[in-house]
Length: 193
Image 1 (cartoon, rainbow, N blue to C red):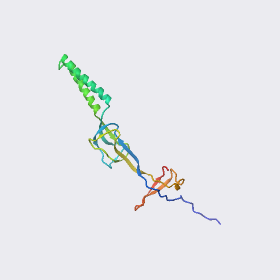
Image 2 (cartoon, rainbow, N blue to C red):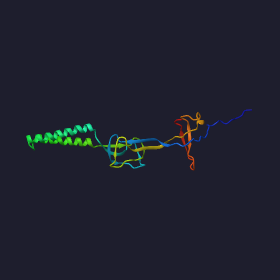
Image 3 (cartoon, rainbow, N blue to C red):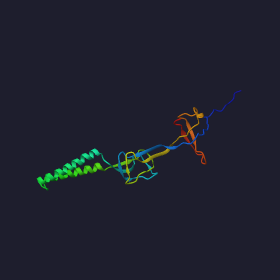
Image 4 (cartoon, helix red, strand yellow):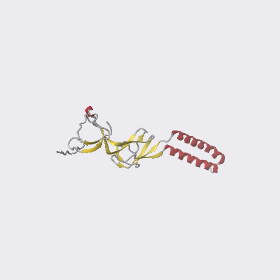
C-alpha cells in the first residue's frame, strides 16, 4: 500500500529580537560644501522630493588664497605703475588708457576669485532631511548642510540571541512584522549577521 505525502513547504519560524535597534534609510547621503562658503540661496525645503543633479542650494565660496594673493599683487603693481605712466604720458594717452583697462581686468579677476558662485546639487534621488542652512548661513567644508535620503528601502538592525546562530544567514529571505497595533509585514533580505 502506497502512501501519499504532501511536499514540505519552506520552513517558517519566528524570531524575537533580543532588544531594539535602529531603522535607517538604506540611502542617506550627507551633503557638504567643499570649501568655506556663504549660502546665497536655498532651492529646497525640508521633506521635498529631489532628483539626482537637481540644484539644492547656491553658495559663494572663498577663493584660493594663493591665487587671490597673486591677483592682489598684480593689481597693486598696475595701480602703482598707473601713477608714473599718467605723469609721464598724460591722463588721455593711449598707454594710460591701456593700463586703466588692465587694472579693470585685474579687479574683475580678483572679484571672481573671492566670490565664485557654486551650485550644490542632489547626489541621489530622495527627499531632503536635516536642512541646516538658510540664505546667509556661513559654512565650512566639514559642515553637513542637509541630507538626501531615499527611504524606499530601509535597513533594520536588531540584536539576536546566541541561540539563533547558524539558523540565519546573509542572503536569506525574511518577513519583518511590525509589532503592536498595525502588525504590518514587509518582505526583507538578511544582509549580515
